[in-house]
Each structure stands twice: as C-alpha cells, then as structure tokens.
Image (cartoon, rainbow, N blue to C red):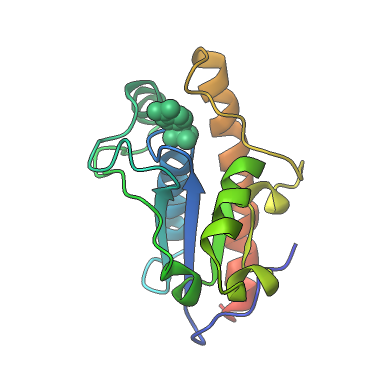
Length: 170
Ligand code: 4NP
C-alpha cells in the first residue's frame, strides 16, 4: 500500500501508537528505525512511538519485549515511554495504531478531524503484506505473543520503508 504524500518534500515522519508504549509500538519503533537506517534513510525519516495511556510514561521497554529484541540483534535500551499528543496530528505524515482500540482513541483525540480525514491516522497493519488486522496485545500473555508481534512488525516495517522510500523519491 502507498503511504500518504510527505508534508515536507524529501522527508517523512511516522508515529507508532499502542496502549502503554512499553510493548508493541516500541518494538515497532526499534525495528522500523533499524530498517530505515539499513536503507540509508535515517537522515530523512523520523520514527517515534507513544501510548494512548499515560501509566508508563518515562518507563523503559517491557523486559520481555526488550529481551526478545536484544536476542534478535536490535537495541531496545534507548526507549522511554511517552503519551501521544494532539499536536502530532498536524506534524506527522502517518500515525499508525497497533489495534482498533488504539485507533478509536486516536480518532477521539483528533477532535479537529483533520488527520483522520486524510488517511494519515490508520492501522499499522494496513501496510502488512499479510494484513490488514491488529497487532495483538502481548502484555498479559507469554513469549509466543511477543514473537508474533516481532514477526508482524518486521515484515510490516520492510513494506513501510519501501513505500516511504518511494514517496520521498529516494
Ligand atoms: P502495549 O502493551 O500497549 O503494547 O505497550 C500494554 C502495556 C501496558 C498495559 C497494557 C498493554 N497496561 O495495562 O499497563
């Protein structure tokens, strides 16, 4: 799937959003950032993540998520949880929700309705070659849930980087 046109030509800004910003969106942030760097686009493409909730603001990544990322060759140590801000709807090219509840919360937050009407606020897995769908919340489950999240975010990140590279004319 194509990504929306960049707000600023030549660059792209992506925000990834889940509930707590300690499991799914941080995993997606670390993986997508790694793929962006691998593609040589780290000067042009910015990736951040946030939660719709504020319970974990300032916390590092969930230990299970961090351990899996480390085992798979990623660096999860820089992550600190933050809450999504309404101003993001005016600045980010894409705001991608991990599940339908996160998306509904974003629509609620975007009272002006500007971002939600132009396709910039949508589900992350709209870009999954095996999607669409949700990224299931692994927080209350076991290791298999985290491995499933990683598989989803890896293939979706690959597709997103290809689409963003095309959109910014790289
Ligand atoms: P995340 O997972 O939204 O993928 O970061 C969760 C993290 C924390 C909670 C729920 C989900 N929580 O209820 O604290």
